[in-house]
Length: 111
Image (cartoon, rainbow, N blue to C red):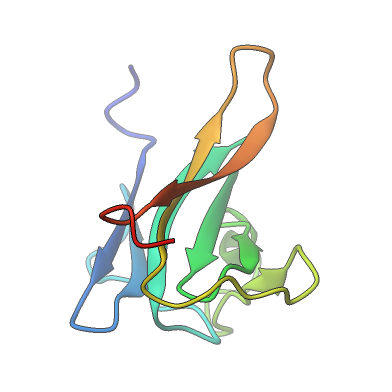
């Protein structure tokens, strides 16, 4: 592990928003647009965030090194196809074969 080269990503708040900080920074970075995320993961050197209604967005946390005055942009990665609110918990996971999976798990058997 290189302690001089790392990125920490977090979800925070009541309607979870995404923030990240790099080893060389003193303050958190808040990308645009931002809000209501259910899960976040690193996959192939990018951050993938799952919105509460099911769409997946990606963020290249390393691209902001080129222009620190411009906020990094979250980019949609899936067509908007919402699942029923409060019906499922959703997760992003990497399979043993290296694929990014979007997993829906029933919430209290109500689906």
